[in-house]
Image (cartoon, rainbow, N blue to C red; front, side):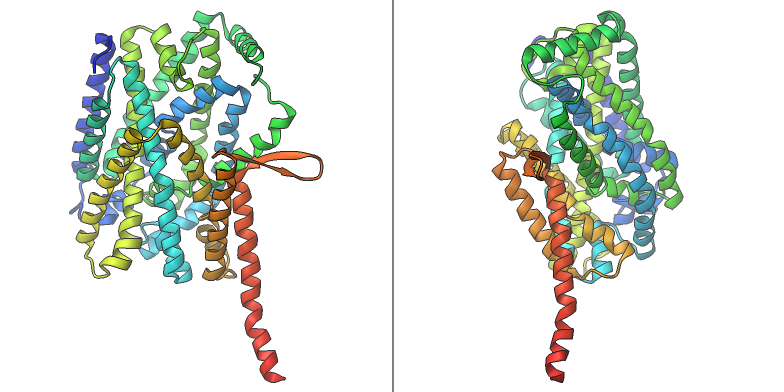
Length: 496
C-alpha cells in the first residue's frame, strides 16, 4: 500500500482529513434541531441555510473534486475546447436567478423534498413522478463514482496504492453523513472551498514565476499541441458549435441534478437563492484559474501516465512537500462535500418517490428519515463498488450519459412552474423518447458526448443531451396536441 510516501505531505493530508472528519460528526450538533428523524432536518438541514451557507454548499457540490481534476486535465489534453465549462457556469446563473426561487417557493409551501414531489404535485401523475425520481438516482450514481476518482488521484499522488485508503475514506464519509445529514457537507464546505481558493491562488501566483511567466506558458502549450497534431490554445472553426452546445446543455442540466436541487431546497428563502445567483460567478473565476493549470502542465514539461494526473503532478513538482499535501487534501475533501450531498439527494428521491409511494405509504416521518439514511449509505457503497469493479473509463462514459439523462427531467420539472398546458401523459412520452433516443445516439457514437448532424452546410457536432432534450420537447408538444384534439373529434362524431 505504501509506495514512496512523502512523509511531510502525508502528515499534512492526514491532519486535515481528520479535522474534516471530526467536523462531519460534530455537524449533528450544529444548529441542532429537536430531531434529525425527519427528512426536512436530515435531508434539507431544516430549510434554514442563509446566503453564506448556501453559497458554500451549492458551490461545494457544483464544483467537485473531479472538477478540480477533470477541467485542467481536459485543457491539458485538448486546449481551449476544455474551457467550455466557463461559459456554461455563466449561462446557468440567470437560470438559477429566475427559476429556482419559484421552485423553492412551491417546495416550501407544500412540503416537497425532491423534484419527484414537485412533479407529482403539478401533474398528479405517479408515473411521471417515478420517471423523474428514477432518472435523478440513475444520473447521480456515476457522478458520485467520479468523486471517488478525484479522491483516488489525490491519494495516489501521496504515494499510497491499493483500494484500502479509498475504502476507509468513503466509509468515514458514509458514517458522518448517516449521523449528521446535510449539515455535515454544509459545515465542511466552508473548509473545502477556502482550501481550494488557497491552492488555486498559490498556483496562479507562484507557478508562472517558476515557468517564465504566462507568455512562456501559453507558448509552451501551443507548441505542445502543434507537436501532437491536435488541440490548441484557440478554438478552431469546427469546434465553435460543439463548444457552444456543450456549454448550453451543461448549463440546463446543472441544476436538475438531485444534489444541486437539494442545496436549493435547503435555502432559507427565494432572496437567498437570488443573492447566491449573483455571488456564485466567483466560482467561475476560480474555475477559469483552475483550467489554466492544464496549460501549466505543458510548460512544466510533465510526463503523465494519465491526463487526470496533471494537477497533482504540478504540485509535486513545483511546490514543497507540505503544500503538496495541503493541495491533495483540498482535492480529497473536495470529493467529500458533493459525494455526501449527492447521496443525500438520491436517498431523498428513493425514500419519498419510491419507498413511500410503492412500498410503505403509511411510513412515518421518522421512518422516512431512517430509510433515507440507510439508502444514502447503500448509494455510496454502490458507487464505491462501481469504481473498484469496473474500468475507470467506463465510469467516465456513464457520467457523460448522466448529463443527457438528467436533462430529460427539465420539461416536467420546469414547465409546470409556468404553464398548465402540458399533460402528464405528453411529458412522460417526451421523457421516454428523449431518454431512449439520446441514450441510443450516445451508444452508437461510442458513448461520446457529441453527435454529428447535417444542417445543410455540412455536418456539425452538437451535444447529444441537447438533441435529446429537443426531441423530448417536440414529442411532448405533439402528443399534447393530439390528446387535446381527441375529445373534440369524438364530440364531432357524436353530433353527426
